Amino acid sequence: MNKDLSWHIEQAAQESDLDSIGLAHNLGDATLDQLHDIVAFAERLKEAAMVEMWGREREATGMDSSTLELPPEGYTGYNPS
Image 1 (tube, helix red, strand yellow):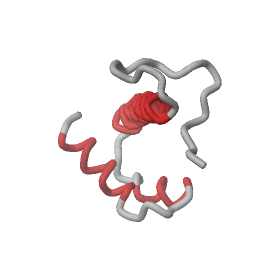
Image 2 (spheres, rainbow, N blue to C red):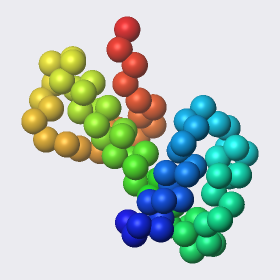
Image 3 (cartoon, rainbow, N blue to C red):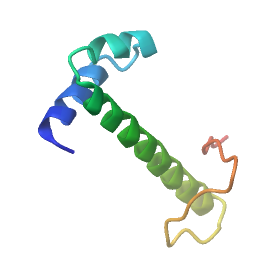
C-alpha cells in the first residue's frame, strides 16, 4: 500500500465510531483511484479478519487450527459466549 493510501485510511480511521457518512467526509481528499484501492484493501482486510476469527473459533472448540483457512460459506464471525 503506498504512503498516500495509508494516509487516507489513517485519516478515515481517526474517529473509529464514525458512521459511513462521517468516514466518507474524512476521505474527501482521496482521488477516485485511491478510493477504489481503499475498497479493495477493505475487502481483503475483512476477509483476513474472518479467517483469523474462524481460526480462533476452531481453536476454542478443539478443532485443528494449525493452518489458516477460509471460513465456511455464510460465516458471520466468532462470538464466544
